Length: 150
Ligand code: ZN
Image (cartoon, rainbow, N blue to C red; front, side):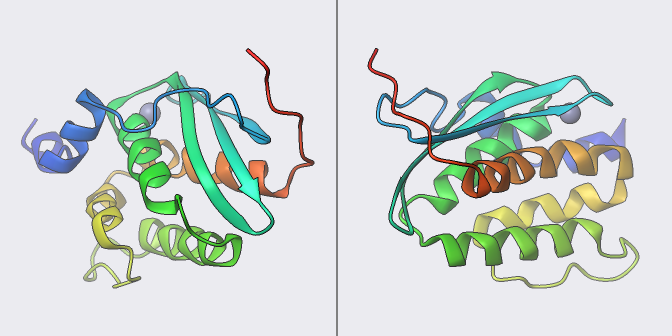
């Protein structure tokens, strides 16, 4: 289990234990659902998009520690950013997670999100870490939906 201990770094553990932005914002105007059947992770990403600015980002769902922590760190990281920047982050995160684990993790300027570089060594976990990002992209590329009035 020493490999797993390495993988579950403190940041990931912390975000799994106390996920940020785990909620459904009433003013969300974009959303998408994502599933990773390999692990059983499922989540819904909610956005409040105003023109090209991500004013709010949140998620709901259930999954393993990696997928939950990834969604938590992602929503924290993209809030307040322009869509163009968010797509750049998506590309950088994807490059990091799919880079050769034998070489040093590339610096994609991802800040805290770089902790997921450790996941490269566990190919089966890469989908857990990227699920939230694929779901986010689907939400950004999807059509606007009316905000819920609840
Ligand atoms: Zn998972």
